[in-house]
Length: 82
Image (cartoon, rainbow, N blue to C red; front, side, top):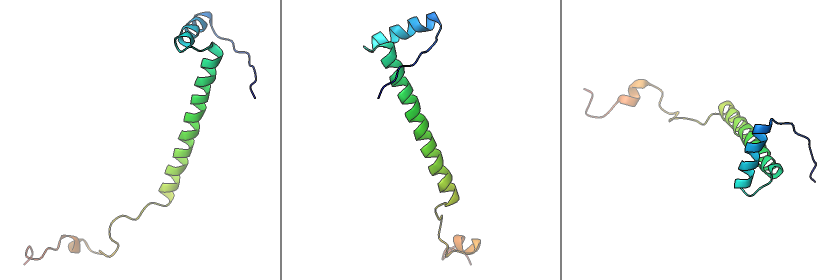
């Protein structure tokens, strides 16, 4: 369901918007509707990514091998130490 809104903009901006819309084969109303939809979609995607990142920080993946307990064990190579 579509709903009309009233919008006030400066005349020079409206003229430039008409040119931009015409280049895309759209009305100013359709141009604004597309841009508004894109803005909302980007904002929602950002919020989802932020929530995922925060969840990942709360439960980070395990790094390395938990069986190695000492620094020396990481650097111990047969034949290199005497």
